Length: 275
Length: 320
Image (tube, rainbow over all chains, first blue to last red; front, side, top):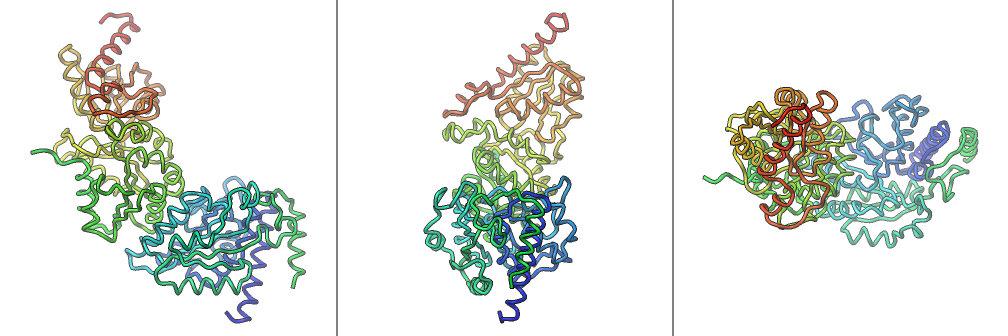
């Protein structure tokens, strides 16, 4: 990725971050922390790596993304709206009765969502199914999955970690959004994940660990993961929960936060002032 | 000639369909040899997945396969398919409107020597609470073959409670089946016995013979689909006979007996009794011991039927 491309992608990530703050702020409550920690990776996937066509959201040979930590839906909705999967006006309908944009990702309601998630732990299993089905049909697209650090407490994550390696599925490229916070506190207090790199390595995955907000690093990691021919990939993203919103960043209680629209507007203005 | 095991008919049916339909794939959780799908794996190695002892993962993988157009049949014992994977099946398959064919084997007392841990009297009941899910239990090999085909034709998830070892014969080869359409195996005028599953349909048929000796004419219905239950048939026979006995190799709460009671109490209040497992856990033993232990026998059905008719007559002010 050259410098000009990087500048454009960073600008896009900021736009997505602002849309996400605006979207949740408009409602006044939501999963702001875990939405903002995945903005960079989602931006890189949707604006640089994934082979997708918003006009044909179900195209059989598309790359797919499973946001296994389904509560980060709002970040993904900002991107899908920006890409034209649905009108941007929908963003202000988040979680309002009858909306197509529920808290947690829903493939039945939302164009562009590739898998319904929300009950944590199920995304990698679904990715395995998609990858096996693609293999049967001779389709070589990538299945990206984003799991949470708290989500990694779930037993099914490790069942699926074993299975993805066993079935030799390099087309699965997964990310752990390692923002070190879960609902009840710091991950090392609630349920320590370390040594997370060794865990995934020992399950037979190709593992990289990088700064999840460094877009150049995330891009390089995705490129390397695509080059891997035998093993599924796990890219551990060291991130900050609530990244980029002054009222939420690093705040221990930012999982599901109440904040008014005025606060959201202020946070967006602060982002605008940054270079 | 001995009948083939139900599991072998399950496998044969899937293999036969898979020859012309590459959407059909099979999943097991270290029970391929138990559930009879090894030949499928040998014939279609790229389309059969043994995921190891990880039922939740199996159902999640099945949902993923379904999301790219496959029709996955995923099987484990009822205790695990039903209880262990409930949330995965609920969310990844059903809430997501996908097309996963989940199969629970060794229903109820047929878990025999595996005992209480493997004995599921609840799976059908909890499955009945999943919106839109088809829940069915074939009583013999002909029904199994036809209903598996019906499941492939139907877009949407299904839960099949499948007798695994052994078989019965209630139907001729050319019988046809539809989800939600019960089968009248024997007509009758005094009482209606509605049964589900292989062992209870056999006991119900035997009970009707015992009742015949008492000059009681019992109709016997195979309610192979418990959800949606065949309301029309239930009401037709409630009107015709005025007394209903349900028979299930399952806890009496939430499965067949409850489904029939809901129909009757809302539309045509009729005295009924539910033969099945009471509010109890399973336990180890051979089939005869367990059937006796939980009252899943023709003689118990007969006794309960006679008691029901007496109660009905008493309520009507008559005598029997």
